[in-house]
Length: 311
Length: 311
Image 1 (cartoon, each protein chain N blue to C red):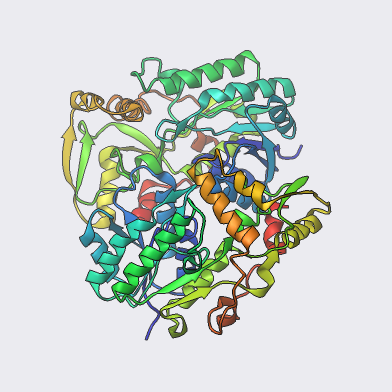
Image 2 (image 1 turned 30 degrees about the horizontal axis):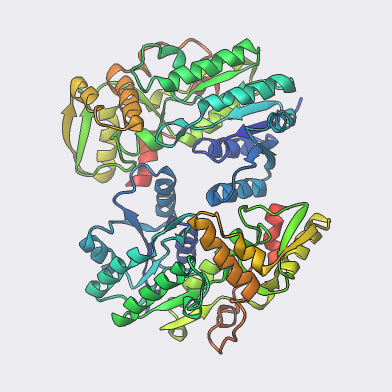
């Protein structure tokens, strides 16, 4: 049996572009959905053309044309959806229901990976409004997948480093501060920071692996389980300077939600669960659930290495 | 004398990203303005980090902080501004007045290249409303530069291939049709299509060249002077198929402006001047004004080569 063929839906997005490259790098015949309504979105068009140059196939399709999705899905064995569920970009998760309908009708798909790549939504039943919509939507998608008996893998990728580590977990910026930094509480809650390229590498590793069939896989490599304080120390070491630290209490942090727009409120909720509650690390993993154990050959990026790009 | 140091303002934009790379490739110490208000614009942040990795320096600055611009400008010899003046993206040309103020106060700049890179605005005094704002703004910027006696080069780069050739000059799409194509009039007006990477290469070639001081340089390499028909023929040859051709008259084309939004009206006006009037080629160039003659060592991309990415 050769390597499975892969269709990426959302291949020009933040994580999708890395999934496309990882799929090609790991030798999969790779298809990328090219939306018929892409219009004058220059960056996306040029990204698609660059994939083509790397050997990917572009497949025209539209979420308002069921047959076009069925036809695209029929070309491959594995479908990976990476449509954005991040409010400050766009929140399109429920569009995946149309993709699931197409996968059902096509009937040939051996594995579907829906757009997850964050916290495990199955563990977020208690999440705060309004940010819980992310988890509720992901759970609704999971239910549709499982009701349709579509083989799946769910990837819990924890904190994307570009969003959470490059800024030392500060909100509203993507660059690290050089003078002052705010700690969430005592800054000692364990979180998990992941280089996005590694998320893509691990994701593609799972797709032909019988061990990951119908399972949730957590990307939680031991050296990237860090507290916010430990992350800040790595940065301080890189720039040779101590930052001035202040702290925000749980109560003050939650109060900061007032007056923010929806995207801001969602973000505060998610940050709360990660940095105060410790939702990424307050549960044990069973054997066969953790990506770096399943694929020890992957040399994942440590955060001191990651932060060098910003120094 | 070593190679001049370069500051790119607008370095994450469509042409700016290519200018940054060309500047680095041609061995210039390269600085890129990093706007303080970049916030959560992930793509731009990651692009800036990628420049840093290639050896560029990021300089923080803001258009609402004059001193920050002066400080940035003082680091270099040459300033290149590539802020967008394309309505379907954003139209920021007049912000350049603030940059000109900073260049004036800094007093050290040997060459300034404002955001031009299209048709020569000095030849577009007769342009149609509302698209003429592009040329009027560029002329206002030129006047400010010349009043301040800032040494300059203006780059007239004609039609970016990604906007005008990849779509066989059809509007509203960036992909080439495979069945039907619309000709502007008889499709026999000569236009000039330029690979954007070549625009950047030629642009950087000019900055230390005494021959281009205080001049307008036209990028009009002979083999890229093509009619729309000739461009279509190249595509037909690539895909081994004749397209069904229809034609739109000058009058019908201009009438199509009605009911469009501003960006659409601007585009129709510009297309009219290019494809009906022939404004890119209806004047002769003097010696020393054409980039491919000044820099014959540059192997510019021909359009049959360019279109291969789409085939």
